[in-house]
Length: 271
Length: 333
Image 1 (tube, rainbow over the protein chains, first blue to last red):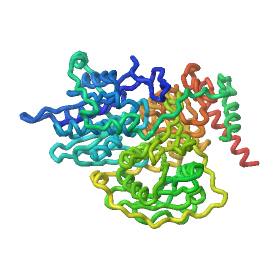
Image 2: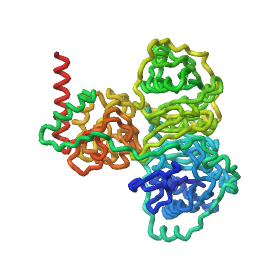
Image 3: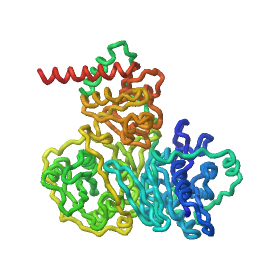
Image 4: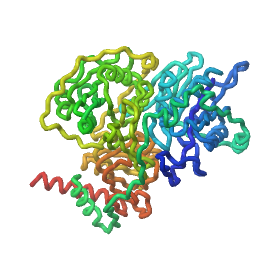
């Protein structure tokens, strides 16, 4: 089985995150880290292959971690290798800078298609969101780019290698569903069910020396005009630090806080 | 004002979701030609009551569309329907809600049509060049951004309560166009729904749409009863932090946060909630924020409009009792 897990290197959410003058998020700081939600995706991918040990004579399983991003993003791949991924692929090209979520999905899609043409891919797994932009657009966009079935926000994923299908359980805002689709397919997972394993020390050491395959836009056969700022149909025109809320009130309860709060809610029209 | 604006109407059978009236009100500020898109399982379209409601909030017409041969709730099926509508009428802007499902529809539609997408917007305007510009809260509410759509079609997912629904002065029932019927794409047909169990209905408003949300965190120590009572007197929903759902104090569908339900209520009451960045990312568009917490250093006090440092097991029931007393007094007067 061959699983590709999409991962992203993002600024640590506990750090002082900021936008640059050009409206792009400041990236590449020392605090940047593998997007926590992608660790769950990798965990789900690793469990998929572990559930079906390769038979003797079969090709060994391959769990590929794939990222698109500037040079420091290789650290997200190394973290993925330390957790147990067997292959790392980094799409690194200055032309990618400024890609919005849809253009990013085009780059990921071209990378998956390139890998698939070499050795067929069965499942692509993605996290439920990037903790930087929080749009949750990429998994569905990637499925559309690849024209593969989309099974998103899963909290259970099972592949049937014989029937060549994947089944997921998911909770939408209105229902609990079980969906099935033929392979290859794009799956995204929530942060509820795939608590990521902690890498072993030997894994961390090995990951430092493991090869990382670097692909540029030309290798993916992508027209530079279809990605980056040129290929994005959204443009950030303004970013600003949100001002503090005005007229804030902070009281310490001396037994009268509930009455004062009731007055405040009444004044705001809630009571 | 030029360019048709479409609103994807969320509905269950004939019942229109209240969010649609907010989207229609917003759409009216952007165009004189606002149309409601009505995706249906059967080619029945909206009934008279639904057409009246949609017309009252500014829809000039309803565009019913049915996608044959695939499950109607799947992203790919919804997108098949929207592409058919866009092919038939053409539009500059499509507005929809901001659930995970809405955002996936927006993503797929963008790839297949070249549209530009902004998710989780709280404002939508047109700039001097006529481009659609959407504003949103980002980085867990610490920054705001405004994003212009440069392509010919903008798809914007809008957070609940970003706009107050206001009816038009002289309402006219929205006439329904001849229903479009299209065949589902192979992508929609590829996914089989083996099982679907609708969530049980609750007497409280849904978390994502509620105007008032009372959220409990670690400080509740697992007792959500006082919070439920406060939510009921305020007509609101009850939510929780990840800590509370992980402890099993309440179902994880109640989790408010950047990976849970995103809420944008007019009133947020956090009880025993510290205000960690994970949680803040799911409520950064709340209008009025009230916090009750024992810890004066809790980060939630940095962004609460009204903070009470105190024991929530005393303050919350006392508040509920006082609100009830006032309501009963007003009813008796």
